[in-house]
Structures are given as structure tokens and as C-alpha cells.
Image (cartoon, rainbow, N blue to C red):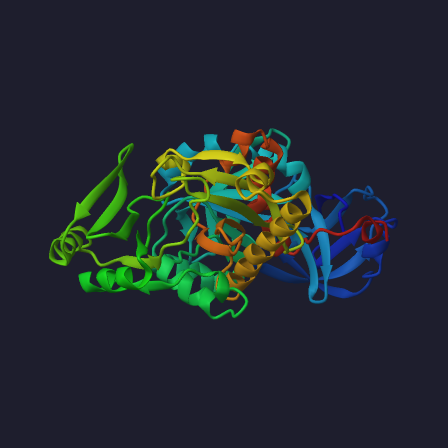
Length: 451
């Protein structure tokens, strides 16, 4: 609805929800029985008019207040649904394993001061250790908008849980998924091989995927190297370009390029046997993929690709909020910033590096966005994630290739390096606004708000 209410306890032995006479949309429910939802709790109530209430207040009989345990002094919204009314939003941020860790992390969650006026409701910061599965209660820190501080308290389970920058065991994730389904999000981990197989099922995405194979034995690299002349070997779970090696067939030899510390290194092998010995000792874990080499060294000896950032908004839709260009250092096998790469404005890089006209740049940018959003929608069928950093490249024929899908804390601060702080802010705020949507409070247009 978009209107803000304070919750007021009304002494009444019956289960009642009270409205001011001028609360038109809510008055449609007068003398009707409805179901009140607060977090995972729900309770039947009869809707009544109470003239002594202010227009910005809703009254709840003490029996309901005691059962639902709504914090007072909070700015609430009410969402009228087919199965009742949701009081909220009620959002949980799971940020730590233990209560001690949680206490230390509070200082890193001050951005809520700027976010709260747009989110409202109850926001609780908690650790896994603070969950009481027997009572369905959480001991954590509840944001107080009046004092603008996190205050220690005990509260029922929220309506939605956002996992933020922490590791959670599979067993614990299953527990939360059993309670919340898609309303427990940012919990997914998809390795590169699983991601490739998942995306390969989509016929529209398939042409944009480099040929990819699971590494099982040293001969695999030799086989695909002979087939493609250049292959990349990447860790299944690698981040920031770490552990990536490039294998190249050259006249009478094989060359392996990689980055170590801050240096780009190359090793040459003059026989298949020597190459296989190297592979056998280097890739012992066998947790790697082999990927065909792409012709994306558009500027001599410099890899060029692009990072598109997608966020889920408060309408539950994917938004392409920006794209930056990345140029690897000379002879580097990756373009990552952590490996010395540079960030450039995407549009100017498309224009200069690929010699595209302005209409061609606009058309190419549009197509890149369409590919990225198709990828996000495909993953939506399996997991709930609200933020992707999707790395995309163009080859010399301007074909679009999907390089990587970053879904575990993607480094989106690179936008600040080109002076685009507004995009950085949008990305940082994405999860809390998407959580509001999942909690039952989608963004509505002004016409709907005024009804």
C-alpha cells in the first residue's frame, strides 16, 4: 500500500485488528475475519473501526500483540493479500555463525540508516547460533529507526532471510530452505561445471557458451588442445581469475601461460610427455574444467571483456544496472582487476577497441544485456539469487560469449573506478529491496498507492 503505520496495543480479549475510519482501503475489511501474517506467524483476527486511533496507527488487541510479538515504535506497511494481511516487511539478515561474530559485525551494517526509510518494517540481524528451532524464535539485533541503532532482542522468525557473506553448511541451508523456499536467498553455490550444464539446457544461451569439458585426466587437456589449439583450464570453484592457465599449441612446442603473485609467467614444453607430466603434477585435485580458447585479444596481447551487473528489484524483475569494460594487462590470461587488469567505461571501449559506430554500440550493448538477462532467468529456475556479475566478451567477429557468471559476492565496486557511484549504491541496496518484495511488499505505482 505504501502508507506507514505505527502498531498500537489495544486492551481487548478478542482477536481484533483496529483501523481509523479514514483508512479507506483497510476499511473494506471491516467486520470481516482476516488472517494477519507477521513473519512466519499467522493469526485470525476480526477487523474493526476505532475512532480513537490516529490515521497513521493500526490497533492490535493485546492477545494478538502477545502472540505475534510485534515490536513497537517501528514504521509498518500493510499488504492486503488474498489470504489475509501482511504486517511488515519483516526481513532477517543472516550474517554470522556465532553470536560473538554477530556482535563484531554490527559495525559493518550502518547502511541500514539510509535504507530504512525506503524499506521500513522490522529488520533483524542474526547469527545461526541465535536460531531456536524449538520455539521458532531468534535472538539477534533489531533495528530501531528512532535511535538509528541495532538493539539486542528476541523476535519470531522473519518472513524472508537473506544470507550475507557467510558460509553455511548444506544441512543448515536445507533447514532454512524447508522453512522459506525461495524466500531464503543468496544461499546458492554453483560451480563452473554445474553452471555450464545448467545453462546448456537453454537453446538461446547455448551459442554463447564456449565449448567446456570436465577435466578427468591429463590426456583430456592434450586431446582438446589438439582440437582447439588453445584451451583454458579453470578451477571449478575459482574466484577472481585465480588458478586459470592457458595452454597453446605453437610450432614444435606447447606453451602454458599463467599468473603467479603479480607476474605473468610462461613455460614451454617440447614434447607431449613433458606437457603431460606437468599437467599430472599441477592438477592433482581434478577439480577443473577445460574450455576452448576464444579470440578475444582484441588489442594486441590484451584480453578484453565486460562485466554486466544484474539485480533483482522490488518488483521481482531483473534489471541491468550497468556495464564496465575490463582490459587485462599485457600477456595476462585473465582480465581481472586482482590480476592487474584495468577498468574502462564500457561504451567507449566498445567503440574504440571494436571500431563500432554509435548505432552499432547501442545495438551490441542491447544484445549483451539480453544474453545476460537470459542467463539470470535460466538460473532462476533452480536457485534464488538477487545479484549477478556476468562477464561477457566479444570476439573479433563481434560474437557474444559468456565468460563467467559471478554469484558469490561479485566485485561490483569496479563501477566506482569509473566514477559511477550511483550504480554501486543500487547494487549495495539490491538485496534489501528484493527481500521487501519477497516479504510481500512489491513496489507499486503511484496510481495504485493513491487508491
